[in-house]
Amino acid sequence: MVDKPTSGSLFGVPYNFEQPSLKRMLSTYWQPGEGMLVEKPFGVGYTLNLANWRSWVVLAVASGLWWQQSQSAGTAEFDEDEEPVEVVVED
Image (tube, rainbow, N blue to C red; front, side):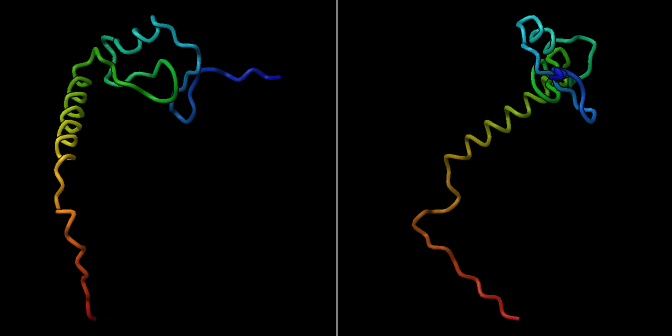
C-alpha cells in the first residue's frame, strides 16, 4: 500500500495532517519577520501570524463586528404581533 503524504500543497493551498506538537503550534502562530498569513500547523490553508501588527487589526475589527452583532441581536426591528403586509403590483 502506498503511503499518502501528510503535508504538502494542493493547487497552491498548503495542508498538514501531521500530529501537532505544542512547540510547532506556538512557532506557527508567532513568526516575526513573516507576513500576516502563515501556513496552519494542522489542517488546510492559512492562519494569522500574531507577531504581525496587521493580524491584531484584523482581530480587533472582527471582535468589534461580532460585539455589534451580538448587541443588535437582542433588539427586534419589528413587533411580533404585527402581521405581514401583502403588496399587489399591477402591470
